[in-house]
Structures are given as structure tokens and as C-alpha cells.
Image 1 (tube, helix red, strand yellow):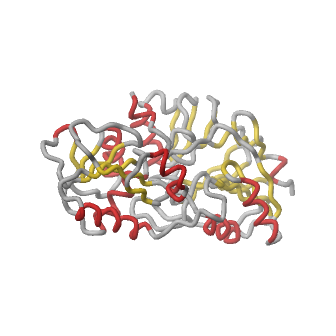
Image 2: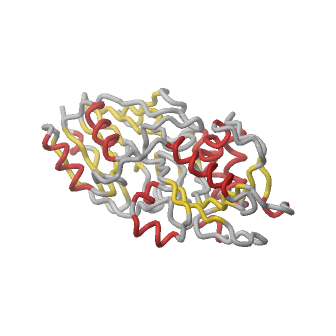
Length: 337
């Protein structure tokens, strides 16, 4: 049986399945792309053919436009299998954002799983992560340091609502990525009992519409441009964006990076909320163990610490050093168009 390293290879354009002749989340235009999720650093425009979940394809079309989202677009449901040139392939939930998927591949008796980005904390806006037994597990390591231990998101939302009560005449402007983070925050607010309208920057409104079209109820959402009085209101906007007609807002930043004081200072946040759509240190290590994989490949983030920790448990590690994957909590490019 050939080791996955003989048929799954890191190349300048991304991770390439040689017998299947396709790339996973390629960073440049290719003929055949399998996309794990619709964030802009994983779902680039212009591929000749794209395979992904129906939700990811819908989000890509909303972000990029129907033509730039890919030429031939093939939707694959979770658990549905196809065979491409002898490679058996299927998608399983990654728990990151709506439609996010792990890519599982079997070739000549060996199995590799590419996680994309993922989290293990329950999220009402997307299907939960499902571990897959494999020979090689390809993981991210965005928060691959022991310092990154995410608190319960419900507690962080409680801090936001406490601040709204404390400052009833001010507008809370929450900086969050337009795809995934924004919708999760809305769902968490609704579960915490916030039934009032939530006001949205246009970049978030477009993504919320796709979520609702796929059965994710988000409640009363309104364009911030139509608001007359935002005192005591909650507004969601991409990080760093300016919301007109809001005087002396409480600037809130929702990100796993809010664990780091320097990132809090650079964000300008008066109220930092540690809410992440990525696995933290414990979840990364637990996931590696849950797959039972004897070998883990790390694609981006803090590679060395995670590989070292896995090695202490007898798991062989490899840093792929793929470039081109960024931080979706950075300023939202879609908001600038």
C-alpha cells in the first residue's frame, strides 16, 4: 500500500492529489479544485472546475459572483462518495462555518484526511466536526500554542450583553468577519435572549442571506444604513470598518486573537471577546488523537509546537509550510469593494 506522501503532495499552488489530478484549497487558479470552505484564503476565484458542499458553493457565488466562483461547479453532500481516477473521495463536516468540510481520500488502501479549518465547540449555524479515522491527518494550527485556550462563547456573549446594559445610550459595534463569525454571533445572541433587531453592515447582510436560505434562522436583521437611532443597539461590521452616524460607539472585537494583549491594542477594542471559529490548543491535540492517525501534517499556523506535542504522544509530524492562507479575522476585503 503506497504511503499518502506518494500521492498527496504539497506544491506551490497547494496540496495536490496526484492520481486524482485535483488540488485542495489551491492558492492559484487550477483546472480542478476541491474547496473545504468559502473563506477567501481557501476559496479563490477562477478555477475551471470546483467541487464543494452546496452551501460552500452558494457562499462562493455570493462572495465572488457566479462566474468567478468557478466554471463547472459540483456539489457534494456530506458523506456522499465519488471516485476520481481511482481516488475515493467524500466530505465530512468540519464545524468551522456553514458548509465547511474535511476532505477524505482513499487510494490503494490508504486514507488521508484534509481538515481545512475547523473547530470542536458546538455552533448552531453549521454541522459539527466529525473525526475520521485515517493514516494521515492534515490539520491547521492557527491557534497551535498552549496559551490559546478559548473560553465558553456563551460567557463572552454574556460580557457583551452586560456592557449593553451598562451603557444603554451607546452603540456597540462588533467587529467580526462577514462569513461565519458574524452569523455565529447572531445565533449566540439569540440563544442568550437578545430578540431586538441586530443591525448589519452590507458585507454581513449578503452572507446572512445565504445562511437563512440554507435553513439557519437568524431573527430580525436590518441594514445599518436604515437606522435612525442606534442608542442601545448592537451593530455587526467587518473589523476596522467605520459605521456612519454612530457617535462614541463601544468598539467590540470578536476573535480568538483577543487572547493576546498586543492584538487587543491593535484592534482598538474597548471590549475584546475571545470567540473563535478555530480549534484551540486542547481541541487541536484532541482532534489528532480522535482520528487515530499515526502521522499528522500541519498546513499553516503554529506548526512546530503542535508537531512537538503530537510527537510526545507517538504521532509523527510534518510541517507542510504551505503559504497563502491567512487570518479571516483580518480586515474584510469584501467590505472594501
